[in-house]
Amino acid sequence: MKNKRAFTLAELMIVLTILGVVAAILTPLVFNSAPDENKLRFKKAYYTLQRTTDAIMNSDTYPEGDMSKVANPAKTFCYAFSDMLNTMYDNCEGTSALNVNSGSAFIYDPSNSTTSLDTLDSYCEAGSVGDPINGTASNLPKFITQDGIFWWGFDYDFDAVGTKVNSIRVDYSVVCVDVDGEGGESGFAFGIRNDGRVIVGNKAREWLKEGANSVIHREDE
Image 1 (tube, rainbow, N blue to C red):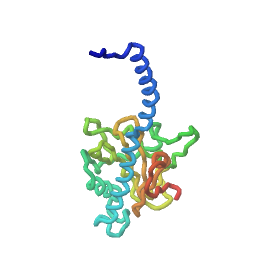
Image 2 (image 1 turned 135 degrees about the vertical axis):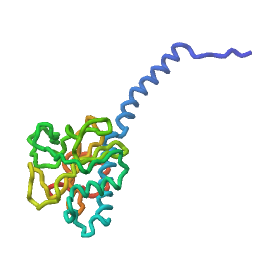
Image 3 (image 1 turned 45 degrees about the vertical axis):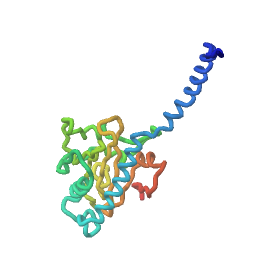
Image 4 (image 1 turned 90 degrees about the vertical axis):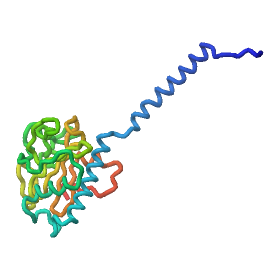
C-alpha cells in the first residue's frame, strides 16, 4: 500500500498566514462597500415624499391644484399624506410648533462655519419629537411609518411668499423626516410648496448626491 502524505505543520502555518493576509485586505473592502442603512432609508423616505405628494396633488383633496386653498392646509396635508402610507402611529391633531431658534435646533454645518438659521436644515428639532409607541410624550403633528421612520412638523400653511416666522419661510409647509426614529441621526427638513414641489435643504442634498434619479429643488430657487 502506498503511504499517504499529510500536510506538515509548516505548510499549514503558511496557508493560515496567507488566509490571514487575504482576510485583512478584503475585510475593510467588504465593510466599506456595504451600503449605509440610514442613507438607504433616507432615500426611500425622500422618494416616498415625492411620490406621495404627487399622488395627493392629483387626488380629490386639492381639486384646484393648490395646497393652500383648503381649510387648515398643513393639517390637511398631514392627514392626506399619512392616509397613503402604512403607519404605526399618527397624530395630525398635534398642536406643538417647530422650534428653530432654541439651542437644540439642528443646523447642518459640515465646514464648521457660521450657518444662518434661515435654511431648511435648521427647522427640525428632534429633542421634542418623542416616540409615543414606547411611551414618550409628543404633541407634534406627526406619524410613524411601519419602517420606523418618523415624520413630523407639517407646520405653516403655505402663507404669502416672503413671510417668515422665527426665520422660517412659511410660503410652504415644513415636513421633518428622521430615518432612525430616536436614534443618533438628526432629522431632515423638507419644504412642500403649495404646488406640490418638494424643496430640499443642504443636508438632504449631500445625501442625495449619489444615485439621485430626479430633480432636486433647493430653497433659493
